[in-house]
Image (cartoon, rainbow, N blue to C red; front, side):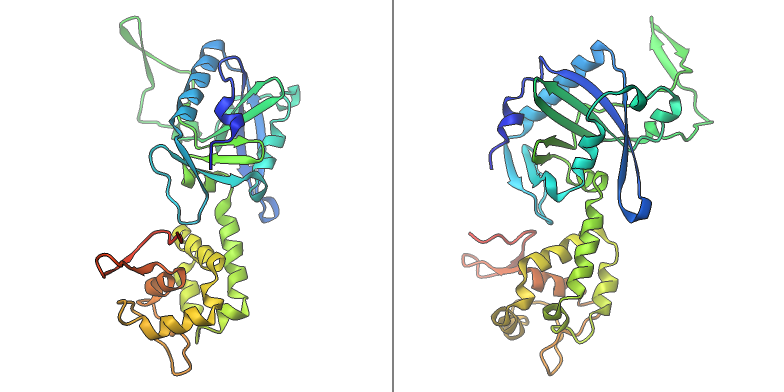
Length: 304
């Protein structure tokens, strides 16, 4: 898909900038984002706008977000804003009111992520970045923080924080353009959605009936981020509910080199050793090349 026109054509140079600092918590198991805005000087504003322009221009193509998709150089992923908790972030940054201004050091320390909000007329873009360790309140008792100025080093007693020139994702109206998939999933708690989806998958009769006992597979997936993505992709593809696909799998798994075990009723017997290949099979990731006549695995089997 093309880069959203709002992002592609946005006039960063003449936009106004505000920076919002966010802390995340989980009351009642749901993510909550508390944002505070902080004053920035003109030099920082110009540097931020320049960094956003550079990042925007580095995006050459955009692909739809996939559970197993990777972000390569020059690429970005797209997901609809409504599929995430992003609106909770943008609602917090609706206005720079006095009650939401960061005025104390504790308002800044332990920030989980920050948002550079740029506004030009009625157009608004939020650029999101996860913070690094410099934002944590942990004291470095064995280090001296020094500053090089006027050809000499001096003791710097003021707290300092790193602001990256990079962006993890842009929130652009109804679109999220992702340049760091892991940071996006972490900030917006997308992994929690994967966990909920896996629980729903375990309750599907069509999924239950292909196993003699799925407990070892559930234990294998656990809370592993990659395994959860794969489990959600298995549900999205739905091959387990296709009788023709499952019959072909039972008939051809040996010649394709998959380590699978079936009972006399045709149900999969799960062991820790077979779990990786069970997931490959249900993802349809063991493919046959008509050119080399050999089998290979792919990260995301997309039909052409």
